[in-house]
Length: 172
Image (cartoon, rainbow, N blue to C red):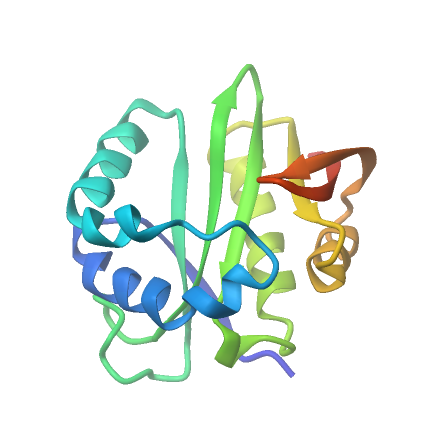
């Protein structure tokens, strides 16, 4: 089952491990979510700096997910290996949209469920949010299961990129 996971608020020193994570999992993610595109990877340093600046305004809260297995030192952090990210975007009037990506090598171990649960707790206690939304594609049943296990309920059909999707809501 799942090893222990830990969330860390995104910092500048996470950049190398985060870029490696995104590159390593690009094809895996593209199977179920819109691809970030070549420009994201080519301009990653500027993108990362911009997200950190935006995070300082309180409009977003980005977190990396680390395993607590000791890792191999590629996390940009003290121990643990970067195996995912969980984010809150469009933070406004007590609500935000939750998004997450978990490495292919960590899939099926409960990592996403644990990371989303941890972020929901942070959203309520640290960030003072009262509700969250999340979207996923219809062809991603694993993501829908993660959301449902964390108390998200169906709100409406939508699109994610150009793909049919579902939007969920959760009160905190």
